[in-house]
Amino acid sequence: MRRSKANPILDYKILVVDDEQGIVDSLSVVLKRSGYQITGLTDPLEAIEKVRQENFDLLILDFLMFPIHGDKVVEKIRQFNTDIYILMLTGHKDLAPPLETIKALDIQGYCEKGDRLDQLLLLVESGIKSISQMRTIRIFQEGLNKILQAVPKIYQLQPIDNILEDILSEILPLINSKNAFILVDDVTRISSGNNSIYKGIGKYKTEIEDFMVMLDPSLMEHIGSARVDKKVVILEREVIIPLINELQQDIGVIYVEGEGIQEGSKLLEIYASQAASSISNAFLHSLVNIKNDELNMTYDQLKERYMDTIEALRLVVDAKDIYTRGHSERVAYFAVKIGQSFGLSQEELELLRISGIFHDVGKIGTSDDILFKSEKLDEKEYEEIKKHPLKGAHILSAISMFKEVVPIVKCHHERVDGKGYPEGLKKEEIPFLARIISVADAFDAMMSDRHYRSKLKFEEARAQLLQGAGTQCTQTR
Ligand SMILES: [Fe+2]
View 1 (cartoon, rainbow, N blue to C red):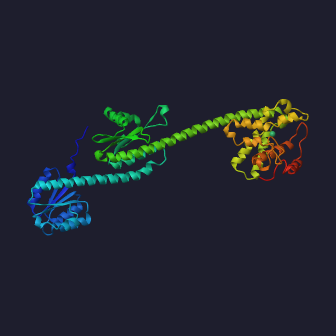
View 2: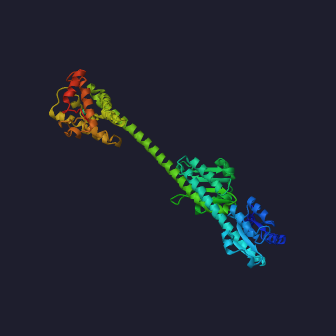
View 3: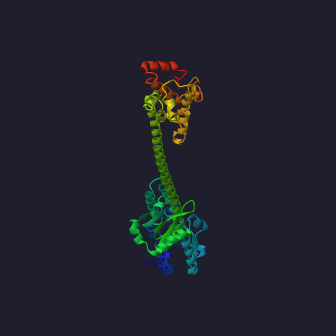
């Protein structure tokens, strides 16, 4: 049901003060006929109290009155009320208050009583127009202040439902409304088909199913046209504001019911543009999170699959030679222990562990005849076996997650005296972690049985390591 529009003039209250009852009466009749709310008084002192107690927009008062003149009345009123618009009546222009007094007391106009009343009416009308403009400016200022206060709240990074609730609760005071709703496209779930988010406040605080029942076809049409045209639709007591993001795309609508729709629509538009930005931000953040999660999941799956493959390959290497079985795990273990004694970070220790496990993975490319040979290898065979660090590096280079393992595996047979392979690097040219793997590798080899020799005792292995310091390996970082 549509309500009739409120008469705007009835919103304005005028106080008429003259010590002659006849003048109060006649002015009241004329002004009431024009639609204003009038209060008439003959006692100027009572008028001061009346203005103190009630909220009047405009005061029309006589200058020459008993017991105090009009200028004195204004002087007293101005001490507590600087807003009221004041028109002064004079019996004769020679009896008017001096111009300085009119200016000093902020009296907006005066008119002679002898003049025709339509001149006074014109003054009242222009006064009401100024009051109305001042009201609009004030409402706008207050509204802008409310928006400024609301903006940090609606921009907080939080779940989209909470943002929409905050947007709605902050919108109500802007135009003194109780009922509103917001309908937004959920860009994060468009592919799943459930692509609208609804939030209501006041009578619209319901589930979306109940809300759909409340929607009548004409309202749906208005919502549609607001979104398609990207323009505000102002109805008698409702306003529909499209939510437009930074890319000028429509992402939803805000619907608000209230009395001050006409005056407040500009404020609502300003607020809605802030709301649209905060909603876009929230969606963008969710999308980034979703993409990150997807990426992490894919990365984890990829890593898992690759580790499985490498592990299978490594087992093949271990299975090839009964003497080296378990060697990789032990190298990883010793390398981590050495790393810990150097106070390395968790990331570096993990790098050592992985490098230890995979340091000999390149041996899967070495033929069984060479790997299984019990006699001493000839030069050609030895050259072949020396290729395993590079082959391992190539295998691990296939995936970026092993990027940091590659140089360690590649250099695990380099020696600080430059006599190692594959490149003959010296001292600090060899990555520090590769030098640790090299020591761990040598130590485990010495502590294990080989088909060409028995394992050494711990003290012997330790002595050999110390002997090799500065040639095969290094004691410092
Ligand atoms: Fe090796």
